[in-house]
Image (tube, rainbow, N blue to C red; front, side):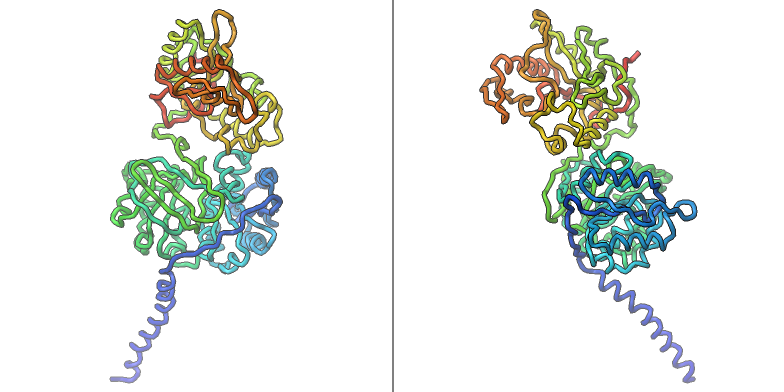
Length: 580
């Protein structure tokens, strides 16, 4: 054999081995559990950096976000290059965006980094920032969408991050909606433990692993790079998407599958797939992806409220989690230090697909069905706990679904025989009104009406104690707040407390047992009591409502919802005004 030809295959084999060596090393090194550090939770006065690593965000929006952060007790600092614009969309050149990320990472006084918005551009940074720069001074990076790149870089560096709202969301909502407040609380050490409503496409099972993932189109290009957190063993995979075609989601998911990611998964969580074009005919994205997940015999949780919808609940990426999917619902638990806080997702998403939020065709004027009802619509006036007319109340009238109003007519006929009329304070309440309440509750210094409605309650605890929430049963159209009016005295019946009083005195069990109707006269923590007659009056109203298909709640004697409500998962937005 010619010596020259003899060495050719040997040389080729040597080159092949050299090329394969890093690939083999990567594959061998990746098959291990991911372990991430929990960054320190924030304290009042801690610095929070606002940076723009992707698309441009206006200086005005960044200032609004900074103002909210100050209201949360933090000290916002803005990246030197925030507000710059490069080409059409980028928030500066890749070098400028990288410089701001490094500035925030290297500043030991900065305890968290909140990105102003997503878009595209973080992929430019994935290969230029050594991972050790993200672990030298561990701190929370917060964002979603294109910020998925940074979250997976941070997880690969061994540091947890937060998939959650960004500066643009905080600015636009005043930091006052549920998603913003849960993210704020998480930064302060209150760790959400999610109780999730059942979904027909769920696959039951229980698993533990490290939560990784985010936006599908953003993290699939990271496979095989230093930011690949998906080839580690024992992962729980989360994914969401926006404005992608179904066929492209299918392609991206199968790329991930072919790279062995599903083989490393202990469970999968599907978030929102917003405005995705169904160009292949599947009933839903979850239906399409379930067929690929099912053969792996791992739990699947569908419909978790995180992604590009208005409700975007925070997730701790890189955290050890336990996913427990059952036929009656699911739980997602973060096994990290901090104060555990249960968050229920029921009602955060409409159950119906046609979304008739602006359609009032199934509603009626209550006084058309119950002509004897008296209206005192407090939220149209300034005499309410906010002290001003509430958004969405354009006329002093009361609306309900036709089904609920018919049941209320039966209640009215019942109490009329006892010498009473119904007096209504509120019924249907648009979502814009609930949002108004949320904004007011977040404005802690505004205590104009405190002495009238919540003198013993710390306003900063209104959310934690359940007095204010991001969703209300009133918005579904079959809930009513009411009392009795005595036709003989021509006065309201004395219930021993006023509508919308924040305190134990408003609870149906204050003064006795509502199930048995037995009075006990026990005082509230503030030392208040109600008389036996006042307790009995509450029971008269309660019994009449229960007889005709309404159910009470534990916190308010005046609040009742139709058991068989027609829209149990739909939250309407049209304003309160007389239906012609």
